[in-house]
Length: 636
Image 1 (spheres, rainbow, N blue to C red):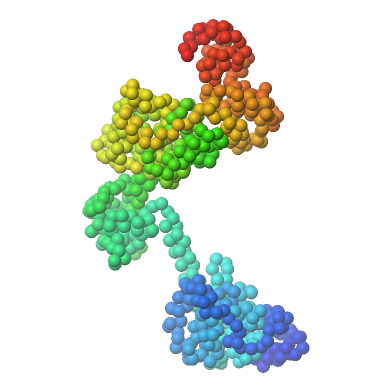
Image 2: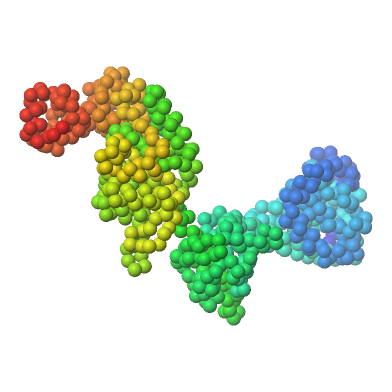
């Protein structure tokens, strides 16, 4: 609040009257009146600012360091007005939002205050009524005449304060205290305060904006460069610095970036060079050749045109290595581990041994072979191994070797050239930096297996239809329902590939050999089903658990999961009893299996091909069952 000059004699009378009687004259400014009453209630003795205790040197130094940006601005601003401040004996202070004096920018010969003022809090509780705490309270520029100041020693001075506002909050307060008010017009001091306020607010907002921009650029997964026409790099973000260092473009001694003309051998054939001719480049695959290595990036180059004459003196380049882009896409597509080793439930010795071996194998960088019957949980174990490994930040990509034809399987693994300019990466490239899970690897054709063995040995591949070699960095976790060693002996599986993937073999035990785990597994399955389908958690009766524990489970955990899922959706109550469980899953004894081969085959698979077990499940004799086995032409 800018106030017109007041009669100082009257203001002194108002002050003295209040100090003697406690009565506020109606002509006293309301903000001053409120502050006087507060100050009197706090029993603040009238004394000099320099007599007030401030913080110690160490704490003051730490506080000043925190506000370095504002102090640097004030230092630069006051450098040009030092003579002015000295001539008129003006005390100029920078305070934080709590009214603590950060810095005194007055002349060393100032008669009002000494450097001791730094670290002193000029709030109402400490010094009583003063322009700085009025400004802090009301967030407004405020001018105060001498007799209104609480400390009587300064009644021959005037003081004014302005808030420095950033994002709607008071960041700092600038305060002046001057004695020769009759020599210098009040408007001149207020103009000084407004100049500091406006300039510092713009400066701090720009600095905050630039800092946020810097953080954004450093957080982005792209390398960002601002390149001048002569090939110098004017700016790069943190990732860009790392990339330049990787190709020897950073002079460590001089702490500067080398000219790109001297580093990139094909610089004049890159989109950066063309950018200075006004040619933009958006998300193009570019090859960069340097003395150290040749690599491919997805690159965007935007020319920066002068707003006056349209000339181009610099460009902005944004690049990402293709390997990084594939990893980013893999994560976005959900190619991440869903399960940790902790989600593998079991207390049996065979389960504990399996988890211990998996944890040890995860820490190494060998390829891994998981062997066990179908449905034993090999895929979950593979997820857990990936998550426990140093590759957990990379993608986890799965490929079932029995799902597609041999030709498509080879394209899926190695990638393929699809046209004159179109080429797609395969799973081995997409999983680079992470893990490739090859499920049912025993179904891999011999020719494809040989090619895969070459790729894993050389850590290089060529896409189908191309001669370009590409580096890969991938760990294979292979799973097999069969004994691969025996398949190799029968020449049904590539021996060299088996040697590569079998440096670490983990056997996944069947469910019938870990019956102690069945109650825990059943409870875990119930919880997962409830969470997945947003249902209230059901529980199994003791008879139901006994039934599950005594069954042989030829389909292992996968079969048990299907049986429990069927029970959850067909049971109304919160408790699942033994009679609610159908060990054939959704195949019921009263189903039309006698007339439907598909239903019969599902029941046959649920029983694991065991005649006695299937007879019990279907409640028929073995003789009757043999008749239908012959009818449907089923071979064990």
